Length: 290
Image 1 (cartoon, rainbow, N blue to C red):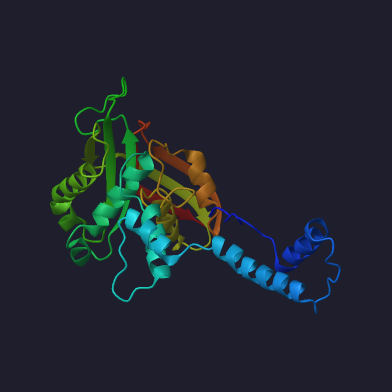
Image 2: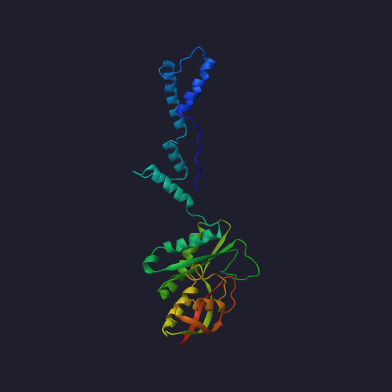
């Protein structure tokens, strides 16, 4: 929200005339004709008109001032560019994240670095990603939960594409590029680590009651999408880090699918997650009974 502009003076032409006429009896009591036809009143109106123009100009910011303000931001108008366009660029530049200070900054800049890595869009046009930052953690050399590693920042890169085999060959280069990108923008005393996600396998055996036996594919897709580390979770922003999967989650999820009458039985083999781990579906068996 922009700050409201302060008006230095709001007196109008009519108010100036009224004030001037009120002072005539004080300084010129012999002046009794205050009609518009009087030459003195004409002069008063003329000076009031000039004064109103000066007051108007006092509240205006000259274009040269705007140019100087833009220069302070390091912005120069391009050839043929209007002042309004330059101001928009200046405001946009101020709102852009260019330095990594907070956890959100690291996540945003890591995602930007990944997506802007030269050639990555051409090789993996369907690439999707999620970045998670953990402060005071060295996930590269020490995953211990006993104590915090102050000054260390770990960024978890979760990348997905249809061509996962080729992506695995590029993983090391991608992490190195993102680490270098963040190192150039981090706080001087921070140490940045870029790591792969730590997955824990889960297995699910599911028995459901439904009329359509082909609904198993739908159930499989719904479960896989719900626990997806990039687009899963209740907010569709990725399965939360360290969040365990429970049978109650599956009951609620599956019985909400159109065509499912009810869930007969669920067997869930899912280890308890540590705060920096995610779940990965290893095996999913679905049995549909009428």
